[in-house]
Length: 316
Ligand SMILES: C[S@@+](CC[C@H](N)C(=O)[O-])C[C@H]1O[C@@H](n2cnc3c(N)ncnc32)[C@H](O)[C@@H]1O
Image (cartoon, helix red, strand yellow):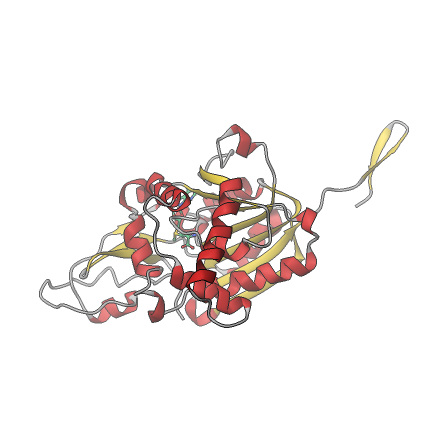
């Protein structure tokens, strides 16, 4: 199984005349092509290409080479939430830094009534819009098949795949597609968005891509999780202890590489604690050899206040 493909060695000088088959970035190390430039958080608007990213990770061709771990973990977390949260506690879900992907909407389609997909890069939002309006939709059938298999049962047929996608689309239609920047105090600047609190928040491989140091990461986590209601659940997918990833192939010999903030599990956990999460509720799914960590954790509920003449007393 593969997650985000870690980057090829940037010290390597690559030669032009060494063609290769690319499936994993690690293979690039064995097939030198050309020197690789690593883009940073400030380059997303200019250099992140949604088509390259989708083709590299989620296309029907790419999927058999390494099913994405998120498609295994999110359905498990969705199932746990279905069992442990009442329907009126799980009205809305927001995905922060969804990129051009809709798999979180597929995984949560039955759990919530409204789904909000957000990202920083306009071209990602355009791809999501095209999917929503069916104007130029990416083919998500392989991804939907994997998700459905992980929910249990046999592989869905064409009709069932279309039904699953339609339900995900309906839920995103009720919510929406919005710009987000985790570095802003108001992560989603639209009035209707920023004044709202969400029941469930998903953010997969976003913060470590968006931040260049730990201080920035802590602030971005705070900004982002302010949108989650007290008592709500966060699902955080993180790449740990890695410094860059392949965001697609511009051509067969030309990977697009972005930096990642090097994070340890302890740093992530400390940060969540600071942001008022109850770490006793944390559930973890880790693939250490892949350097990937998925956490589900509840935000502490609002303290109950009781009034005695003259003052409020905090009960919990
Ligand atoms: C590695 S991709 C992850 C995309 C998707 N969540 C997935 O699982 O495939 C990182 C995403 O973070 C987004 N991003 C980068 N900087 C951001 C920022 N300041 N605020 C919100 N999202 C940002 C990028 O546009 C990109 O879509």
